[in-house]
Image (cartoon, rainbow, N blue to C red; front, side, top):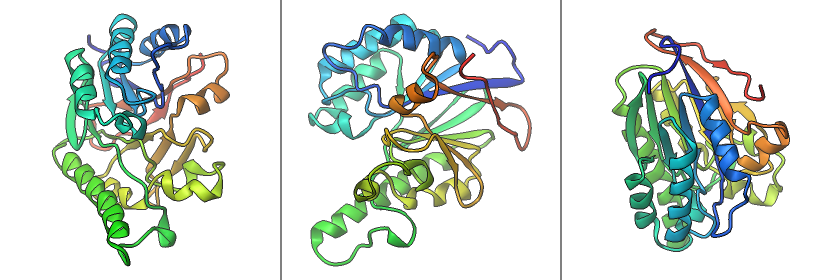
Amino acid sequence: MEPANKDKVRVGAIGDLHYTKYPEPSLREMLNQAGRACDVLLLGGDLTDHGLPEEAKGLAREVHSSVGVPVIAVLGNHDYEGGKQEEIKKILGDSGIQVLDGDATEVHGVGFAGIKGFAGGFGKRALGPWGEDIIKAFVHEAVNEALKLESALARLRHRPRVALLHYSPIAATVEGEPLEIYPFLGCSRLEEPLHRYNVDVVFHGHAHRGQPEGKTAAGVPVYNVSLHLLQKLWPNGPTVRVVELPVGVQQPQLMEAAAAT
């Protein structure tokens, strides 16, 4: 389905659905409203609550029956909890949801690159690969996710470019969470690839009590689209962050759509 306005694409994003075996009855209507508000819907990880294939099957059914636009997703840490992440990816993929994990795709002239991301902290306080082997392995995982993001972005030849993550690449959108857990909510190693490949907008989830938006050091807008946070922002719905991206121009200027109307 082509967007109504071919010069602009409405990109909607939600994270942290935490779909369970016994989901809230309102979830279907929420997804339906989100699908009507945008031309492509992004799901920013923690799609399931315990990383169970049964949860993924239920979510796949809900999305298939409720959302009439292309859906792109990344996994989150909850989707890894059951050790069935590859099965979850397949279930969602078979249902038509495109799950990105260091991959890139293009929809309606907009390029999307997606990864889960990882923890590690921000700026000068980011954890370094020094000391015990387990610390080095932890940091290596964060570096590896940043390299996956870089590789995915390198495949996108045209703008606009959108990055979808679960973990945050900046500290600004996790502010409001307990300070003790900041290092586990994201990592600034994810920020550098966004600048190198001139990303236009970034969406992430994970920080349920964080801030709704911030910017990278280079001014790239970053939106925290955790469902818990969006429900506080727009209690009357639809609970989806929508950004309009002009297509077919060299340097698009994004415009935030009126998500609550």
